[in-house]
Amino acid sequence: MKFLRFTIFCVLPVILIISVFPQGRVVDVEISLNGGQNTVLISPDPVEIEVGERLRWRSSGEQGDVIDIEIDQQDGVRGPFPPRNDSENPSRGRYTKNVGSPIVTEAASDQGSWKYTVVWIRGDGRRIPLDPRIIVR
Image (cartoon, rainbow, N blue to C red; front, side):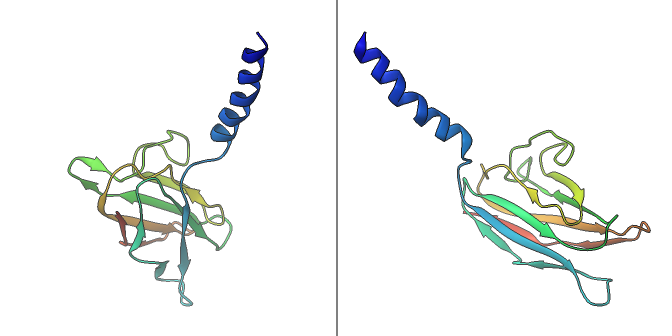
């Protein structure tokens, strides 16, 4: 009986640590508007990550602007990231969030090269698109 108590005590903290900390490195991608406010800039492009890593798109701009990201399909799969099915990630390969709030994916699960579209939607409704690429090794 004493052995069982000790085992539970030692195993439980390990399980909690694994569930609290997400796996894989997070790679940052910066999204910005150029000085003339009519072209979206992405850095890096292409962004290269490994299976198990996540992307975090960061942006800064005017309040009321929105970032919309849609990853193209490759071999019937829309993007390398499984969906979370929440308001900022309503389906696989689709992300929408207010400018200034980071968009973080789940860990990449598929290798390949994906083109994606970033549309910066200004507060007045004007849409500014760009087509960068994600490469997963």
